[in-house]
Every structure is written in structure tokens, then in C-alpha cells.
Image 1 (cartoon, rainbow, N blue to C red):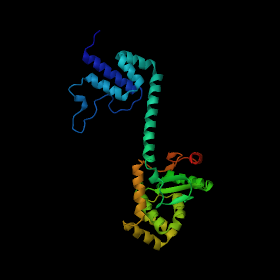
Image 2 (cartoon, rainbow, N blue to C red; image 1 turned 30 degrees about the horizontal axis):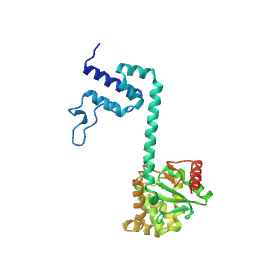
Image 3 (cartoon, helix red, strand yellow; image 1 turned 90 degrees about the vertical axis):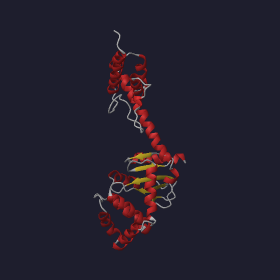
Image 4 (cartoon, one colour; image 1 turned 90 degrees about the horizontal axis):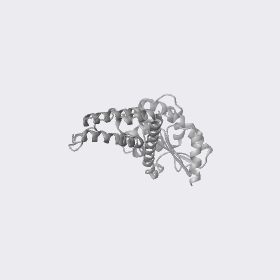
Length: 295
């Protein structure tokens, strides 16, 4: 039986949509026209394009090559039959596509970080734990209210204690609310105005189980460690926007944005590995060994 052009196009679109759903592509409207461009015109409405051309273009965009080749060479009925009879090939193609996309995204994310290597590891104004002259360099982005950062803290401390050539550059972020933001500013103030107490207070903060939600929570926590006079001094420094502590806060924020960081913790062992999230002692030790071997 000879089908009309419109019927063949409809069957083609339906079958292609079934393929997309069958292989697990998650799209809000499979194989529908692309949204309007900024000038308000949809590419789907171009006079020179038929509906079938539009459908084929969407298939090209959404479906893996191995499926696409079948779409180009076979009839819609044959396509549907092939999909039903070869689910393992569909799954294999989808898995390969997902892995390829994930790797491309990871490579792109890593490249953004590597582009800022010199700035990330420039530690002139920020706290450095471990050996300040250490040749194995680690940059550590954290938030004092981040539970996963609190998990990482003793692991990083152990790493520095067991590896005397390791230095850990602290880059604090205030991303989890007002308390985190104020703590980032306050800790930068401690580094500039009471440096000898910074690491003890940092350790106490990261061991603290209660979230610091407000400025008042932060100052109440700091009071027994610093005394009322020093707390008042650092509060005044925060209120002076030209104070040196803003160099730390602004630098960390700008670097995190430039590197495309999505959250904390972020631990980057130079010439080793990048960890977006908490990892165990073994992963850290392996990254340090890799960095040491690369020197």
C-alpha cells in the first residue's frame, strides 16, 4: 500500500519518538520543533523546510549514531521492529553516548580549573596548612557549615601530618547562607588580625556540630576563642570594606566562579586529582603519590 507523504511523515515521527523514549532519552517534548530564537522566529517554520526535514533534524540531534543510521536506511516499520528485536544494542548505544557526554563535561570542567592553576595555588594572602614550603600543593575550597567539608577536615589534617611535603591552601567560601558568608569574612579577619589563632579556631569550627546561621551565631562561637576585644576589632574590620580581609574573600569568590565550582568541598591536588565532594583517605593518599611522582 502506498502511503501519503503526510502519513509517512507522521509514522516516521511517531517511530522516531518511540525510539527516543525506548532508549531512555529524557526530553520534555521529544522531536518537537526547537524553541523560538531570540528574534521570536522558530527554525521549524522556515519556509524551505518540510515537516519531515524537521523531524529528521531532531532525530539527528537526539539519537545515537548507531540508531541514526538505521533511521536513515530503513522504513519506520523496520525501525520499530529492529528496536524491539535489539534492545541490547539500543542500551549499548545509549550507554556509550552517556559516557561520552559525561567525559566531555568532566574534561570541560577540569579545563576551567586548570586554566586558573597559577592563581589557585598562589597563597600569598590566604591561610596555608601543613608545610608552607611543601612541594605537593593542595587547594581546598570549603564552607564552615558544609557537612561534607566537616567530613574532609580530619582526613586532610591526617594527610598533612603524615606527609611533610604537603601544603594545603585554604579558600573559604560563604555559600550556605548568612552565617557562612559572615564566617568567611570573620575567618579572613582572624587571618589578618589574629593569625596565631586561626588554625585552632578553624579546627574548632569544622568540628562544630551546630550550624552557624546568623552573624550573632558566628560571633558567639568566636567569643571564647578570641575574647570580646578581638571580636569587636574584627567586626569593625569587616565593616571597613577596604580592609585587607576583603582581598581574601573576593579572591576566593572570583576563583570559585572562574573555575566553575558548583559547591563544596572541592579539593585539588596539583598534578594529582580533583575531587568534587568528600573522598576517603585512600583517594587522597593516591592523589598525593601521583603528584609527588610527577615532580
